[in-house]
Image (cartoon, rainbow, N blue to C red; front, side, top):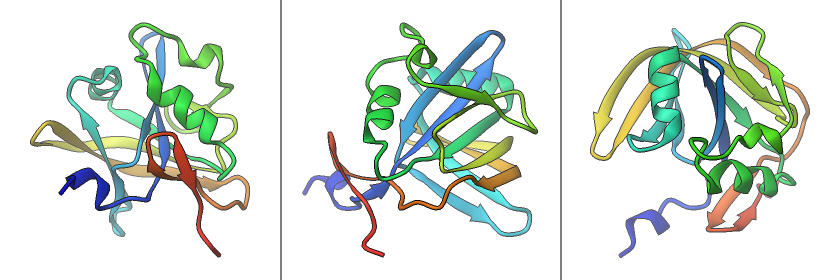
Length: 156
């Protein structure tokens, strides 16, 4: 059994980060609320990913939720490494309000997070962020990845 095919479809997010003058965006579908009090959100990042070091050094990240119509944004943020390609040369960004980090202009909702904990889980690191700003910017059905380039949304 292919372990990764079992939990899909999964809601797709784009995590944006910055360290120094380098901004990046990366697509993830492994993420979850972690606590109500304090409000914490967790993301799972491969140790080899470019964003791993940006988040580790900057101690913050922004979770950008996408509309069901924004599969192309998820593909742009997920197909090339930010080490070799400036994703914000093709994705529109704005500045976060409470952290020094970019966010996606097309995000329908966002969570601005300050890193409070991290721990290894196999080949990934769980970054746990305290949500210091959250906004719903537009009511919309969210984007879910079925597999590869295939996306769907919720029924309701």
